[in-house]
Image (cartoon, rainbow, N blue to C red):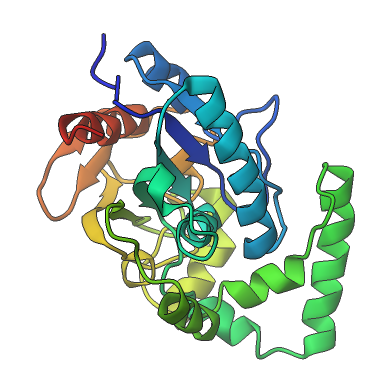
Length: 273
């Protein structure tokens, strides 16, 4: 099966809170893509470092991937905050000439309204939460975690400035994917954040609304074909559990989240990327 054998290799870029390691951030997705012919690499950036630091790490990783593969460019598929780091890599670090495409999965391109409101809480409290999280992230391998800075960089006000300072680069195909849970009980891990975001912003995948993640060409807004919907965790197959996917705009459906990724990569192949 060669449906995912693209012209350029695929670089998977993870989101905030996790690292690439022995327990794969992307669940079953990499093995399924490779089974269909994809040439895959991982971003390897830190879990809770700032956008600037992680983009710098991605730049070094990109150079290594190009040297190893012999390719001129890569296709990036990024989840959550990883998509912002990829955009910084393309624009601010001037690596757009080495990127064929950027596909983002629930990336807060327009900032999070919920995080904007949370950052109005007393600064010492948010700093304390950030510092406590940094301790655990250092134990997990981060060299320069900065969770409080990450919080700031997820707000609408920050992303408004970011978007103005980091326009899309000509020649890089950009598309975004949005997801929705159907109820607070779609994913018990996301119950509390879902309720908070629902109260402050509306329907979401537990963290982000469709309006907050739209950038470039909207590939679609996806939810579950069953009763569950798709959560921020489901999007990267955190549970390694089959979950059906349906596009609200087109009605197309997939028997599993892995099949959805096969389709995304196949579309890149059909574009000659």
